[in-house]
Length: 125
Image (cartoon, rainbow, N blue to C red; front, top):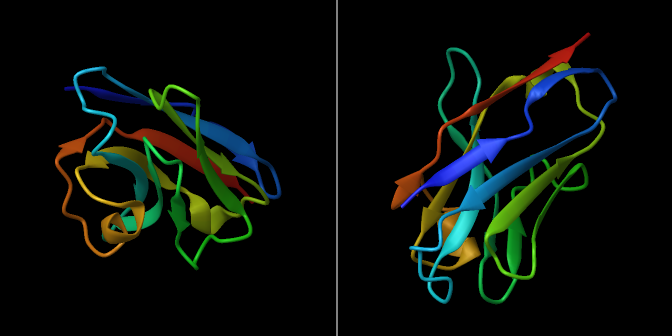
């Protein structure tokens, strides 16, 4: 089982980025949700958003709602995190993860079944 995150980089304040998480086919799409988390230097990892691979039902943390949007392709094999109006406080390593649960339940903890590698997002001031 593999999750591959990509799309990080350097962006100025107010800019946008779209992160992608590609999920291997070995994850049963009918039972898993895929989420995005981030961890800033010296801080704990926090939940951002999750989406059910089967239904497309999503849940976004209030902390980024209105700026971040999660979506998936029709196959559920790629999950996107669109990030708009970025500011320096969004600088962090962003991780995707998968868990056999609903998107809303995934928001409640850092408990996941699989983590992908991180992708660094740096927002310059």
